[in-house]
Amino acid sequence: MIRVILTDIEGTTSSISFVHDELFPYASKHLPDFIREHHHTTRAVSEQLAIVAEKSGTDSKDVEGLIDVLQNWIAEDRKEGSLKALQGMIWEQGYRSGELKGHIYPDAADYLQRWHDRGLRLFVYSSGSVKAQKLIFGHSNEGDFTPFFSGYFDTMVGGKKEAQSYHNILAELGVEPKTVLFLSDVEAELDAAEQAGLKTAWLIREGDLPDTDRFVARNFAEVDALLRKR
Ligand SMILES: CSCCC(=O)C(=O)COP(=O)(O)O
Ligand SMILES: [Mg+2]
Image (tube, rainbow, N blue to C red; front, top):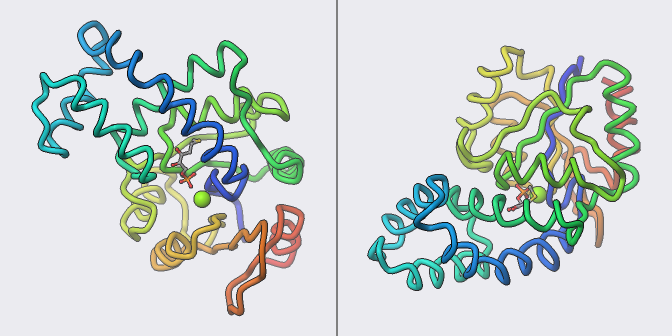
């Protein structure tokens, strides 16, 4: 019996276009000034920049070079923890000013609330930092969804395509794998979760449905039908 829902964000609770056409361009636009202003004064920023320097082989004092590396990583949609941490800090300004409003599909908003009210425990697992996850759900077009979530995981537990990451999440939650349903739009993430014993549902929000044995859902109402069967 499913007692825990673990959900991805981009392509699952929220549209890919919101992330790629609003969040990433906002980060790109504000990143240079943000880094120039904070690299000396804000420890959380300088710590992440040290990681960027090491990973990219850039001199840690070459601030403009580090900005170029980060801009390339945004363009390539790299899931680097240091980039994701910095993006979260930059997006915070946008959410607080009202320039950004997190996108949640209406069906996801509806069922997250229903599942919470039914006693299921809800967790997020996204490549976006925990800060970014709380921001998108805390400042969304559907209101503040943070009260419905019991916790958040980012790539500090490991990459989403690695089975070990799901073992790490299970260990933190202290639950049996078969009691957890993982929702994602990326098949390789579902594969990794299944290797760790989790149940999965593949969200295909647009385009043709794949020919597959997996459980596929167009929206969270269809996921709910699966929950009621299991
Ligand atoms: C937390 S919103 C920003 C999402 C993000 O930065 C990203 O890379 C999307 O990753 P996901 O694992 O949610 O597909
Ligand atoms: Mg996704």
